[in-house]
Image (cartoon, rainbow over all chains, first blue to last red; front, side, top):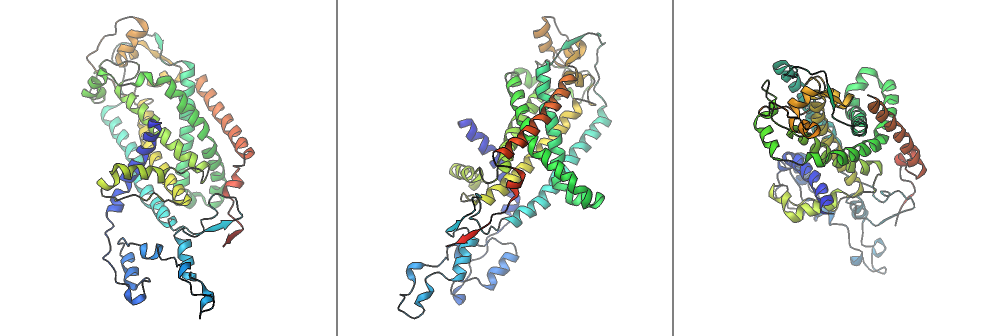
Length: 405
Length: 42
């Protein structure tokens, strides 16, 4: 249970941090004098909102009428009750109306929700911009790295012999995760960028069927993704517990920037462990938020988590103030969707680097996941301690380093 | 490479079964996108 709580807290903390610059920039509006309008909204309120200052809306959200104060039925205007039309619409707008509905849809009693524009603006604005640049930036960085460093080759003489690096079952789990991730990533990008990148290029007629297929794939490949994630976690978690060799690996930069440097590493080196734990944590987070999107309104992830963060004082410490815990079902969905996208971009950036070093970036690396058999010299150079464990023979060149694939 | 192709095929198979299964338990695509009807205010 503590692990589950931690996993829930982590993504929301990161989400809160990602919103921090936006939220911190909103200054509080000066206190307004509403005596002239009898407590109702004034022109100043409208102006400060237009100036993007933070308005304390409690003068509206709490002003919902008072049935107790209704005049007696025998009095003048007594038939009007204690709640005006304005009071009623305010209670609907702030999701405080007691609405009954014959629809069984979980969100049917939320008639009005004003978070949609913020969600839309964030999705069409910072998420596309920063997310897009993150992916392009990573590709650019790898291109520059390739130009400077070239392909990392096997330094010693090849033996012509191979050693089994990953079993068929391990490769099956990896490729189930990888294959579904690639399709999920591409279809997710199509969902986010389709309107600005594909429709202008191909037109609505081509985009519509493409997205019907894309949405089907995105919804349903989530399951093999989660199964693959579970498989690789079970297969490799014991091998990815940090050890003293990781510090040596990190100290020499994993051999990324120098030729012929190969420090000792077991089955996985520090870089690979970093990739593994990123995949596990981001994979769980993206799965949980994805499930809440697959089953709309069934999960309440953010309200309870914000409550726990508030109790720890984290949002207050970073200047966000207390986060709202009373979130409507729609607000939960909007936050899940944004969180899903943010995590997806970070995940994709990391995996692009992983794909690079596991294919064109390093000679012999793809064989580990392709056939499962790697060149003995490659194993000695990149995973010397593992080679010794498996074969009982001494691997040389323990003083040099190898990058993560 | 057989493991890779087998994994891809299995992933597609799971996706198809998941889609049919979700339809069966009432989370079909049509159900998920339907709008709330018959809303009544007291």
